[in-house]
Image 1 (cartoon, one colour):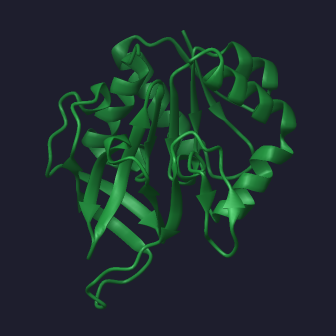
Image 2 (cartoon, rainbow, N blue to C red):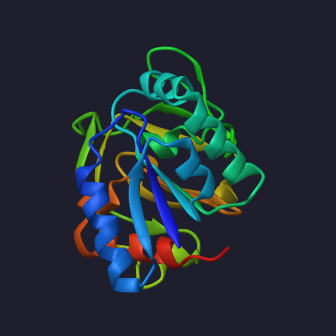
Length: 212
């Protein structure tokens, strides 16, 4: 079993690598590698797409690494490999992003990435720190996780999902802010599971054991 964390030069991957490798050992999920090699992405059993920064820059970097991009799309769309997007990696699953300019996403989950606009103007953007999950699904990545559990966020934009069934969890930040999305063999987390202590590590382990 091989899990590939895709390196397309859009994020610090060290903490993610350590967290995924730790949980792979704990749940006996095989090898985890950080890779910019399209051949490794193509043969991986599951894929993780992180992302830090602005949506347009991450989208450009991902598409600029054409070999990785094509291998990832084929693995997910044609081979049905389990896929996890994290932070901007999750946002890239959208139809379009609206940060600075309108930018095409992967269109794997219909919807738009829009700025967070809390009803309480005392709430600052970016949404940064710990917040309580509200689970809307019994998805396998939530095994052992409950509404009220905390995860760690750093973002100014969130995913407005077109199909409510594809929003699996949200948090309250002066509005409902999408926290987890998913359908078929894909799941995305707006928060950083690798920085979310026991809850985040459990969700990483659940993803590594997920067999959709």
